[in-house]
Image 1 (cartoon, rainbow, N blue to C red):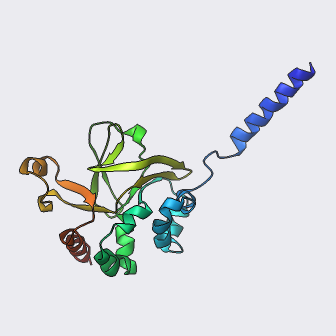
Image 2 (tube, rainbow, N blue to C red; image 1 turned 45 degrees about the vertical axis):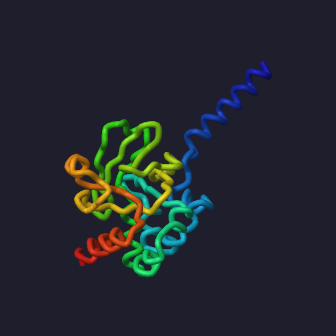
Length: 200
């Protein structure tokens, strides 16, 4: 009888824990802040309007593709000089990596799904052995938070019309009108800057 009472107490405590505590208590900003591999990304949103927005409660969740520190280390110097040093441009670049709505790898399959970033740029997602953003593999996927999901990627994303991507064949350009790739070349940096400035 005493053993039964003990089991009942343990079970009651378990139910209390389930219903009174959020098992995903941390928000996406906390997830990013507490991951040492994402410290550079966090430094760019820390104490900004964007950080405050991502911590608020909305009717929707967020999906963030977060470039890791290695991704920022690999950037050409011009990205730092022309984009990351400018508050407005830096914010736009960070926002290219954010979607409204929660997209985990479990929501996807080998069929390409097009989603829109909060900067109104379409990106293509699909899942094979790993989760991909077009031709970029997600190196650490599905870190869940109470207001969305974080996917770690190994480069800073550059979204461009495929017709401007010289790496693609005509067939690929026709099939995939938008290409997401890593921001690496002078022409990619200039193209991104031109696309942003055209909005102002």
